[in-house]
Image (cartoon, rainbow, N blue to C red; front, top):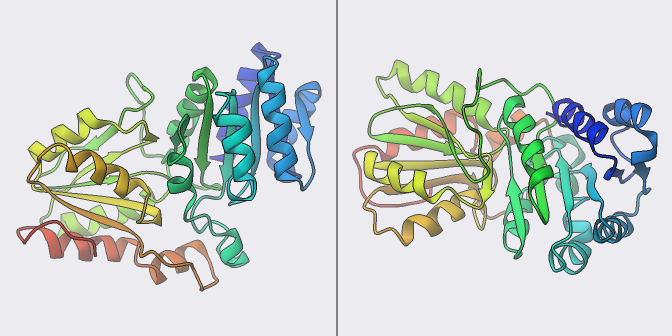
Length: 312
């Protein structure tokens, strides 16, 4: 995803000299092609994320479109006041890019585990929130946030994500993407955790369960139209995210469904309102916090043909 983002941004910046990329002293191996080809449109702000964001807001208010780039919580939680007061409040064209959402940097501990960022960013007025699931979504989302006026948040994985879509017809901001139809239950997800859903779907099919699959590259604005359709078609909607259940993607879906009067059951899979105290690989931590393929399968099995809405 990182390479796709950089390649797409290079193409954009070559055609628009007002596009600026600012890094917080990170990502040099990935960002090297950008600064080699477009040195006058690249700034290293150093390990000073608050300054990076304030500077980006200033340049944006002078007509630039500025992408800030760092890992995990650094371009978001560390400089939240500047994002709120300097960027979003002024509707500045600042595009905040986090590489390593969720447990990507699992071995570095809780300070590098980005599991509250979606909730925090989508809670602020004037910020659009994106979390692509594969390389093609990352390409289209990068193009979309460039064209979107105002402050945007882009949450990326790290690298090695599996390609889900061969092509995407009519990609639009705020629109979910159908991977496949199913029966009775549909799994909706955002971000790079879709590889776990692919494995869960393989196991479910062996058990005779054909789940519908949808990705939501846009978390805010939410695709209310698709959610209304899904709630009428399926008895059970399951959301999956590599993020805290409180305030995240599942919460955004719940907000829509609560106002729709649907009788469809909603089950939200994510970390259970805890700080991650474990350290290890991304795969290991997904298992520890029950957001891996096996956990998804267990939730589906427990919730088809049963009771009312719940979180497991």
